[in-house]
Image (cartoon, rainbow, N blue to C red; front, side):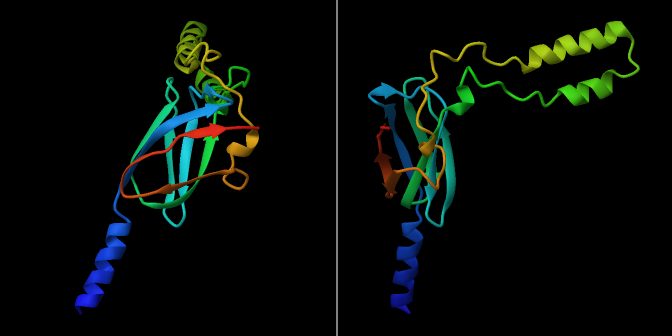
Length: 154
């Protein structure tokens, strides 16, 4: 019985939460926006934002081997975001007086604007890093605090 308790205790502690932080660079340049995600073998996917200083922080993730993806396309200033609200706005505006319709459209436009210029943050990285099937980035997450930096190349 003591042996089973010891084995159970070991497996439970192997899944103890870990904290991971680090810096992401591409060809020596800080990656100042986008997302990084740790895909832990058998433990799920854990994303974090890349901050303007090139750092990230993940807390309370399981230990284990991970494939790591990095994606900066969400802040690409050349990428047009889809207009999800357009169809709904058109339906809502049908039958409204012109003044009310114009006011609603103006308010909706302001709500969708978001950041005006992300060009100072955007770093174009190779597409292979976006997909868990093609990324070459890996990490070993251990119990406690982990500092893991990534230097991306072509």
